[in-house]
Every structure is written in C-alpha cells, then in structure tokens.
Image: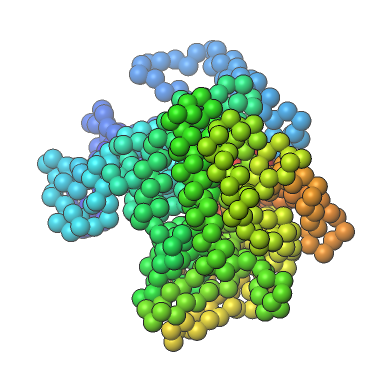
Length: 621
C-alpha cells in the first residue's frame, strides 16, 4: 500500500516526508525491499506482489478478485463464473456484430472494450487547485493568472471516458464527443450523459463557452454537440421507436448560450465569417492558426465558418423537431437559426470567394480557404488543399417536407428565399427543393460542387489514402510556399510522424489519416447521397471506370478506413507496419491497437497506440 504523493527526493532532491510515494512500487520490486510496506495497512494506491519462478515454456495463472474480505476464497466455482461472464459478453455483442466475419467482430469488440476500459472517475475543482490543498505548500501566485484561472466555477466530478486512460487521463471535449458516438451503440444512456456534461452549468462558462480540455479550457474545439445530439435522437427513434424529446430539449437549451458565444465572440473580420482560434488540426496550416498569425494579422478560418454553419443547421433541425410538439416555443427559434444560416452562407458566397468559376481559367478547385487580413488592409487567400477546405461538406441537413409544412411561418420563410433570394451560383446550394423528394436539403455545396470536390477527395494523388482521407493533399510532396508580409512560409505533405515542432511535434495533420474527420466525411456523404440518390455520380477512385453515387462513395471510404485493421494475405494488419510479431506470434496476432492517427501512405499506426477514443469510431462504419 502507498499514496499518490510526488517523490520529492527523486524529482526535487528534497527528502520525502514519508516513504509512501506514488512510485514506491518501482524501488520495492527492483530491490525486493518490501519491509516499509508491512507497516502500511492502507493507502490510495496498491499492488499485489507475487514471486513466481518459471522454467522454459512453463506458464502459471494468477486468479484475482477485488473484495473487502481479506480472507475471501475464490472458491471452486471461479472458472464457472469466469466462463459465464464471457458467455454473457458474447450474448450481449452478438446482435451488434451479426453478419460480420470473425476478425471484423474482433476489431469491433476490442474497440468497444477499450472505450469501456477508458471510463474513469475524474475530479478537477479549479478553485481548489488555484488555492492549494490544506496542509500543503501554497501554490505560486502566478497560478491565479495562468491557465484555467478564469474557469473558477468549473468543478468536475464525474465518470468520463478519457481519450486514453494510459497516456491522456483527462477529459478533452472534442475527443469525448466522438467517444460518445462510439459508445452509443453499447450504452446509449451513458453516451447521452457524456454529451450532457460539458454543457452543464458546472462546466459551461457563464459567457456560454464550453471547456476544451484540461490543458486549456479556453481553447475552442469545433462545436459538435448539437449534431451528435441529433444523431442520438435519430438512432434511438430508428431502433426503438422512442422520441426522446426530453433529451433533445435539454441539449438544445444548454447549447443555446454556447451558440450565441460563437456568433458574438468568434466572428471574423468579414461579417458572417468566423475565427475559431485553436480548432484542433494542430499543424495543418503554414503557421499556427491560434497564435502565430503573420505580421499581427487576423485570420478568417474557412473551417470555423463551416463548423458554425453546420452548428446552425443542427440547432435549426432540433428546433424544427421540437416544434412538432410545441410550435409556439420552437417555431420562432427555428426561424432564428434559419436566418443565421442564410447570413453565414451568404458571407461564404459573396465575401470569401471560395467557389469555382468555370469561366475563369485561373480559378482554383472550389475548396474553401482561410483568409488572412494584414494590418495594411491587404487580404490574402491561403490556397492550400487540406481538411480545412473540406469542412463545408459537414454543413448538410435534410428535413422532411411534411415537418416544414406543419410550421407555416418557417415554411413561408423558406419559400420566400427560394422564390426571391436564392443564389444563382451553380456551385452553391443553401436549399434544394426538388418536388420529387420527400425532404428538403439544406447544404453549402451544390450537386455540381460535390462532383468537383469528389474528384479531389477520391484522387489517390490528392486526398485518398489506402486507409482513408488524408489531412493534407499528397500533391504537396513538393513543398507549397508563400511569402506573407516578408516572411517565407512553407508546408509539405508528411504522411508519417511530424517534422514540425508546432504544438510540440507529437501530432501531425500534414498528411496522416485521422478518424474523426473521416467519420464526418462518411456521414456527410451518406446524407447527401440519401437526397441526391443517383443524380450525383463520382469515380471511385478518381480516374477509374468504377462509378457510384454518394452513398456508394461513403461505403467506399468506410472500406478504406477498415483497411488499416484487417490482415492482408500474410496475416499482417497495415496498422502495424512491418512489425511481424502481430502476424506471426499466436499471442499477438489477434490483438488490435487503435492508434491516434495513421500514415497517409501505408496506414501504419501513429501517436498513442491505444486511442480507443475517437478511433473506436470504426465501430460506427
């Protein structure tokens, strides 16, 4: 038994007030010096100690059970109980893996197991952290002006899924949102609880911001929770027939202040465009988009604007659904979000100049780009093909025609737009009202634009990797460079580990495949495909004779994402690179590791090797 106290002798060269420090196990095991522990009957950390001598080829089994009875005998029924629990798990997962191969079942079940294993009690009382613990040295005064000092209301004390309980044992709001999607299949109520948490008053800032992650609560993550709330609602309705209006209304009410924060505080230089600051995608640009803006300029971020457009559509869709029961409350709110959506989409069309112009041979390919505003008044487009420019795909929502027609004020606003103010830009959509469809489509991209964008998305020379969509186009195997206010900025496609020290150099968005974005691309293609059906056809991959609609494209991309985990003809899974132990050793060949991201050329796993946070999204493809 020992305590969770820092080993001050090892760390600071100061004597330990007690030998029972957090790493006391290490010295005890390596020196066989167990004597101090015989006098320590309790502690906050514990480890059983077994000394076993094994001959070559021998094996021994240790059976354990956590019990408050120190004399508890495991009993003769141990094996029967253990086997029964395994059978119960098999029975639980059977309907969730029906029709899958034995190996695909293994991949899904180990992903779910990793999610459940990553559940952890998490407690962080910010004010207590600032003040320090009773009886302990007073923290430095700088802490009161340092990170999270403006989040003194935050008092987290809940069971959460960690991004990775081993390497990242703290919550990250972006990760947790994706984790909730993955865990929803096996525990819907817990998944809902995870969504509730960060929009709870114990977490949400009085100005509406949601905390990002322990390192800096004030960073901005893409606003996902409204979209995920809608996904949960639809999934439950599809599988159980239940309309959980309470869940939907609670999430809607909690997210309204956060939405207003984005509208009022994250607006960019140009009206209707947005500056997210840090939005993940650490080193995806020529420079650090959250802090290192060249020449003291400001940056209107194309992905921030797309995320807010998607956020707006999700809030509008939730309001429309709730208005089916309470139109007097929610129809006016659905109109409000519709107006906001029109405002944002107009800014994207008229100001950002992000769309293809077939009559202009020098125009680019229709990607959305960041726009840099220099103090001199000069405005520069950063014409870099990356996930930043694909985020417009995510702003898509279909709404049943009958739902809209039940709400006369909202329906009137939609018709007013279609008849009088609709864009005539062939690459631009906003609303598509095909009378042959049962739904209306709200989206930023038109059918024509989807076809053009798909030619890059599914090009193996650009974004399409063996294991999914790359974060940066492979067209930049030769570096892309710009001169900005006298500074030379350069970026190059880097499929594996980062060669940049930006954000510590321990993640790379300049080529690898990341599951969160790929998941949203798949789901967006499905939503577009459900509406356009066979109207939009794309080559899979680009340049081939294999044509398909956008639902086919979603399935095609899903298969690429599964590729990283499935063994080849030699039994080697691409995620393990050339490490043959995972193909040849019987103790390792069925072990699946869920890496943080994957090499853009080979699908070799990169980063944390047990990131069953967002990479567990494989279970939803």
